[in-house]
Length: 355
Length: 271
Image 1: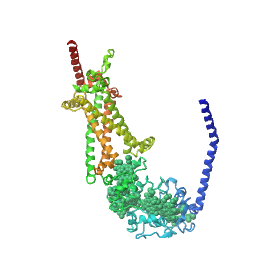
Image 2: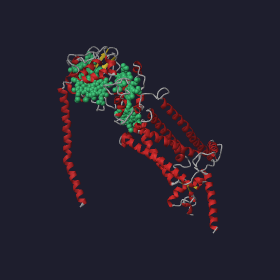
Image 3: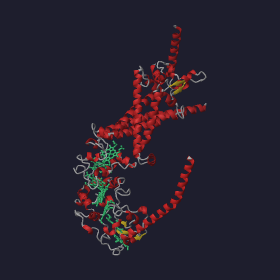
Image 4: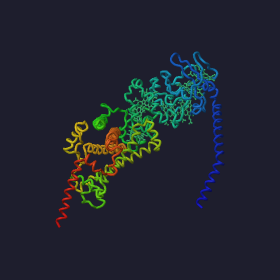
């Protein structure tokens, strides 16, 4: 009886597999087809075709003075996947006539580079004009701009044109003030943290703003000795973060741990002694408390970018230094004795062989 | 000496023969056919304690190392196999509790032994250890032909024992600090957490080196025991080995048995 019912079930399963198998496969095929059609449709409707016909197919290399040549190639697949694809190129590059700009002197056309070599979209090379406006300039920011490297300030204004809220927040932050009021080019513009053509939501693991990539995005600058020196940033934030529990845990693949932006925020980053900063002593226990329930001010001191050294974190330094010596003093003799024993064993065996 | 009894009495307490002090020799000796006499070196409590410690130590090493070396490929594969860093974190904590339990068990065991009237604790360092240590060094350097005449525990075993005690106490303490930082910082400053994380790391390194480089050499790789000394499982040691490694203890047992034999004999005679 039991056996019979089992057999029945198996037979039924087999039949349903035979029936469903091809339909599932067909379904997948039509899905893929439709996706391809959708992709082509998107490409057409957003008007990107008229630009990608050149910028997506050829590796146009623009001559930028004597300094360096620059690839104007855009990876069509990555662009079409990005958040802004549906707005088309014109959303940012207003008023560019696709056939109005030609190869300038010195520009060269080549085959597009391989997908892997695609420009990461974060090179911070453009010069920002000093005394940039504190408000977005409207749709004219990138208007008709060809033949010269697009300035990051212009780029930022183009972004701010649609993202006014973010722009307003950013304007007052330590980065924004240094850029917009100080006229500096080292601090990040929108495009340094987001890229430009391949902007993706933070949830996407390829996004520069994805928690897993944030440390790298920030360390691009905060790990540079030159920038630290210029702006009087004394702490080794990159190293101290990398050696922290959070970073190690994050590297193991834990998503819940704190990265730079969990503690500092992103469009609201201020110097630590600024009361608006999330890591200022007035807020820091709340900031840690978001993940560590019941965190007190004492607890917040469990992480600083301070180095364990004679001058900073002296208590930790004393304890760990003592412990290090303990290790040397204990392991040294233990290993020495093991080696002696091995040595003796060899000697005795030799002696026996001689006899 | 009472310490030999101390280790064996509890083992036999199951049979209710608490007063039996000849227990240092395992019942096998009664089987006349067995040519080798076997001695009980570690009783069941000691073996369980050692097992708990060894088991939790290895597990803690395996689940703790990835956190220190997250960038290694091995680590990644291992973490993926176990189901992510959160799972590994939980396993690590449970094993930590097992280690703490081994420590508590040991303390209870010591107290119980003390209350049963055992005062001499053979694992403590004593005056003779210095001489034995020097002799041992001479032996290692080839200046002495035969092994020094050790008692129940040689200086290396004593050292290992106190190292393990210190290590377990430190790892459990710092582990709890890292586990409950919010509670700890109600009383202590924040750098205590930072220091605990580092000390936890260093002590793990120290313990790992001591166990893998030294302890494993003496109980596994050493030519006399290779591939493994079975004492930790069976708790037994052969007469030959006793004579070689713990000659003083061996003599003491023999001496005591002789005295007890005489006593028994005289008891039989009295009525």
